[in-house]
Length: 296
Image 1 (spheres, one colour):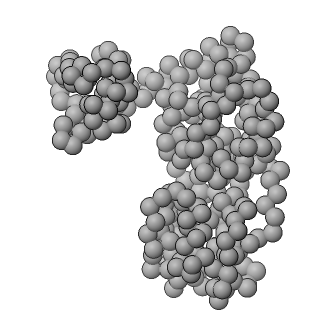
Image 2: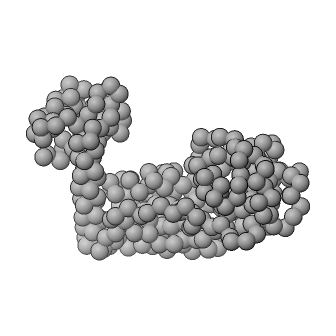
Image 3: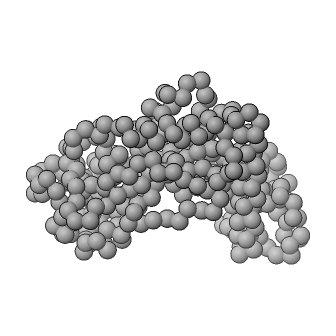
């Protein structure tokens, strides 16, 4: 199988159309269609459903193979950079929203003279980008109560372990308490925002919460705004609350603490350019020196 055909298949599935894949790859749409047809002839199976565009079972097998192949080549490229001169050109750094706002700037300010391309990206997408060689380093996270397995071929270093806090409107009946028990909030409306908060089904395992307000997005500020308006309560990691000006309070939870682990994640290579290792160290140091100030 020609790896270029696998790359074309990946582009079609990711962009959702032959035309979009053609524009990205610099081909014509008929040329992309011919490449997919060539791939199907070679393996004797259909790899795509056309309307809507989605991979067949055979196509999914090839997509997974393409990702593994891309990861092998990306690993080789990183190790060649390290062998060549211990450095690399532009560093491509990925970070989720609150880390990009509060951890990354201080670290980059200390890494003078190195060109950086910063991309805001959530953890699952960061894993894929790292495996494909599209990022050199990424800040990712995992909740202790809802862990996600690290994909093969990646390695990560703990940057900071931060508490997950109960966030309430300032006029909430429990806002004056120094700590909050989840059971006391079971009757409140909870925000269901899986991209911005601990997943609500995990919270339900800890307390019998029922009402919910759905929010599809990854913006912590939106969640805080919903809480401020008295529409819901939420569980948010401390980093997302730094410098928040909203009229909300954040309180530690009684009993077993909830935590979110923030990691510096990269390809698991035998050799890594020194500048990437330096940035990894600076991110760790910057997270450790953040002044969170008093709870809101």
